[in-house]
Length: 437
Image (cartoon, rainbow, N blue to C red; front, side, top):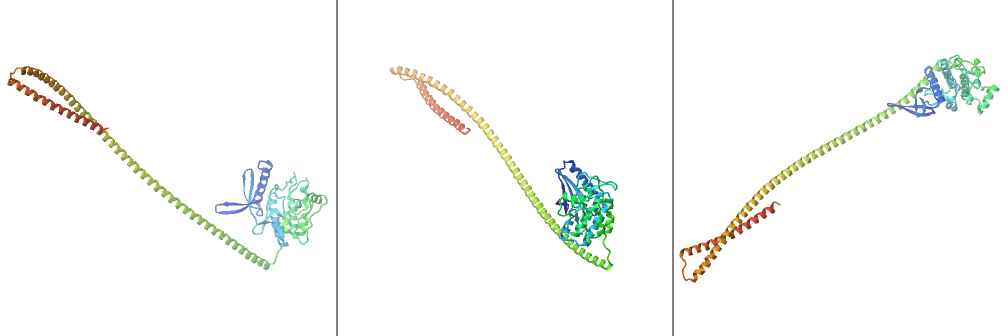
């Protein structure tokens, strides 16, 4: 059995968890089903049974989740119980057993450790691990000895079968222990207890101050039919009647104590609730701050994305404009290149034509000059021959010679001008070629 905490929405409930490992075993599974059936049946018919909250299964282990109680009867016996308190506890247990037996539930393991105490001091039965759910006429034939030997009835050690009378024996043992503070058959081993009960027929000693001592002694009869029923035991253990003033005074004191307890519990609950509210408010404030921070970061990110997008669009527009400008410049340069090439081609063609024309004219002039030189040579020869005779040249011949001399000077002047023009054309062609390279 371990302690645990059950969380449901805003509540936290402390619970006790019983573990049954080894789920693969059919024996453990049958034991779990048996205990669960007995516990559910007992819980439905009596309020004096430990409250079962639920069951679960995880990693091959079965869990029984039950309400967590303040302690058990063993702690109360160790601290010391008076006779009145022992009577009250025994009466409550006998009433619970009466309800369980009426429903066919046999507990089989009643001992102080299995009697828990709730917050109001009322006893509740727990641990139905070896309990049985039978009809009123059924007697269980044992296949093995199960239970705590100090509280077991004699028939549990034998093979004759048993019924609800075994719970009467166990409850009587618990009553004796509450009155004496000593466990029945204390200091004895299992074999010694078996021999003492079955062979020597030893029973626990019931003190005279025990509540309903005579009825408790009848509970230790070795014949189950001779024992009183739990209903008779409950009637015998009923609280003694007191006079009205004592009852009222006791109720007043109990009511005052209850009011003080409830007030303290309410204050603690209010303090816990206030702390929970404060914690919730802090959590909400932290969540709001986190949401605001998230929104701020989201806004900054959106702004940054928009700014980056705008910068990217501007850069793209600038790139497009630059590309267009470059395309225009390339087109203009290509057009200028084409125009320059055309102009250069035209100029070269013109220069070549001028050169060819000049060459033709130069050739014609050279031929004319050669002809004139030939004529002049012929004329010179003729003049030399004529000079041998002292005959004066006729005037017409002198005019022809003067004309030839003038033409010779004109041809020389034209030749010089042609060479000058050809030099200028070559310079212009070189200038154009250097410019458009």
